[in-house]
Image (cartoon, rainbow, N blue to C red; front, side, top):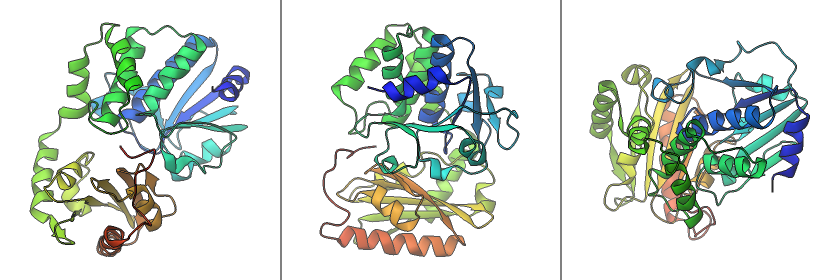
Length: 331
């Protein structure tokens, strides 16, 4: 049970919540945890900091001003800083505020976070999402499950399980989902907003990605690369799934040039390769799940593509190093 985390929150006056990636699970988890903390401990000041603004698709869950972009965070001593849904080593500008806290903690379900340098860790790699872990915290603290809280947790759960499709979906996950539905949330609307609704620009970008797709390793590897000019700020989340769900493909890789010598790598696996190990091999700050992982690579896009393809081919031919069922064998 998360007793150490509970004691730390109870003793703190100012709490920072942050994440290295603004996705559905991270946003839902942060919104839900902020609400749970202020309900259980009235008077606590919760600051939410991030390296980027809240995407519009998640604005229905919280006031967009809740997510304050670093370095423009309130100038206040932080008693406790918590990273949700990711390794603290992957924080960028907000990392300075995180490291300045008196105590630093983690709430996460990625197995690659097991070695994170934190004072307090609430970590469960067998859990389907960080949002499901926040629901467990609410139960532990006796926080009532009202509709706004259930909406945030539901958003995180359906995002990270892709509506309960992935292997980390357990019986406990579905029991938790039933409890959320019983609060009367509009579950279909939340799924549409978080997973299905997309801009025309993203649809067009998907077409570009597919046109640039390459297949290798005897049909077991599919990859595509998108330069910064082509992406032009368009959201790319989820596009990699179109690469891995090709018949015969075991690893899908999407590389996106973010500018300033940074390339975002998204990896997916349908075979025996643990792409969290592959991601960490490409970057010390890479990681994730066995079947869904990522990293930020330094250097030009062409070099990142070459390194990724070479590493993925090696992983597909490795007898044991990156293969095998794990407790985290799902996204």
